[in-house]
Image 1 (cartoon, one colour):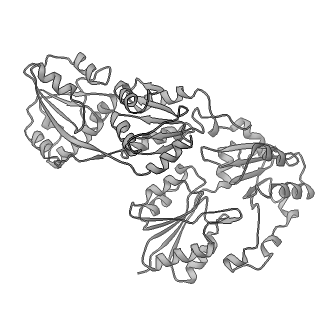
Image 2 (image 1 turned 180 degrees about the vertical axis):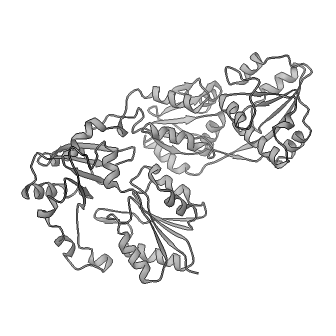
Image 3 (image 1 turned 90 degrees about the vertical axis):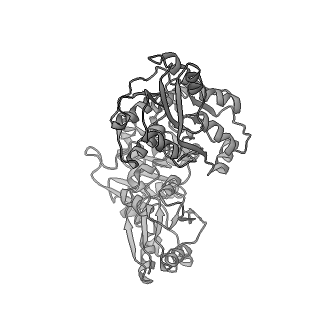
Length: 518
């Protein structure tokens, strides 16, 4: 059977602006054709088994010809595969989605159009510029910044037909606000033509480069000054040009590029199952998280055999959870065994860390004891009762420290340590991270546990040099010590063993935002 091609608008860059329909299409994709303006993280929604093919273009340079992209999409669909064509912005706003849909229809290939948020409205919004405003503009027009004869590429146009559609006398007054896409190279012509056709030379104008991305840059000027301003600032494609009085709202409504971490590239090494929460927090503060999970949470090597046995014969005075992962895996096994929290009977519950306590609360249990510091030494010093003769169960990672069980056993307790999960090395993307380190492209690396430090070093090949300018951020003294042993002393250590604490430490590490060109 013939497969379906989904022409999906990826939005302008910020991965949070992908639509739900776009995400759902990627989830079932078998082949993804993507361009350079689609955020790389969006490819993570596609199954690992999906083939990913880059077909990006940029002005005057075609990595893959449009006709070849058309053929490849149709060919894969005719082979019965579900295909996603992931396009920056919206497929039908200067995205050649109409041409691609025509090609597919002519060959009997089913297709679905999934609109995306266009940079024509998103880039101005992220720059604090409303394309309409009751006090300044009641209309806006979106115009291509350049036309060219691509007869030899697609075979569908006659030479010069495109340029003849650009009636500057009409464009100049098409709307209160004019938005040009792909217009950096022709900015001088655009400004001159608009002035020639009646637009005042002092009309405000703004260019937003990489709009909605964390490397977004904005410059403003007037029609008569903007060309020199853009040249001096080094603004290049991709950029959106906004012309009209609405540009004056930039200073009042600017919001995106004022975050305390704006423009910073932060390497996140948490487990893949936990990376999203931290990444979202970093994006909300203007940073670009570079996700490089160095550990993968997996079932224990005995496939829960020992944990299931202990849960089936619970007779403990204390059950001590040392991580949220230990909680989730333990309660998952309780469910599989047909039980719930009532199986804990009269046992008291200890939680090391607020995240662990929160995970217990989600499962209907309030911890009887949580230490003020979330390390083994604090647990031992603050434990609420003598453990001599007590039975304690620790469901935890297979690779955890032995300080707690060994000390309690020495104090006369009966301690059963059972593996609830294991952490495995994850090294996908190591080559890219290695290049970013060498190029000084990372502002900080975050480590949330000793395992993330050890696995990071192993993934980098056993030895790694972190530039002094790249700040190392660790959670807690144990992680900091591992960082000191294997890399170098961390620049900052969070005393709060939470994502909030880590983010606060990051913000304090960068007291000012990246210097902006305006």
